[in-house]
Image (tube, rainbow, N blue to C red; front, side):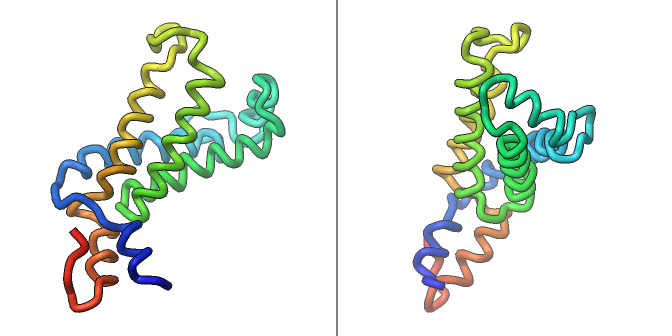
Length: 155
């Protein structure tokens, strides 16, 4: 594979601050995905989530539940381990945009009314990771360092 492409995808800022976003964000997304996919943590699993998605106009519901659940679960795991953080965060940001616009926007800002404040916070953190990358403590950083010719670092 093209080492320049790998370097661009896995390059990130040098600091540790991305870890402060990646860890809780990854945990939240993975848990929400597990609710949708497996019915864990009080979730409804694929069948229940798919039926709900059909009921709000996201058709076909079972496929949308599979896509949303997989995005959240596997994207969350990717954030937790720091692997392919930029693409994972970009897809998670898109998922949050869909959730905000299709479910929460009509309820106003606040969570107490099923509003979009939580989705907006997740969207903002995902966009931040898309822009900044995985940070110093990540598999992306190790991959990027190994993909650069002559041992030069991409940063």
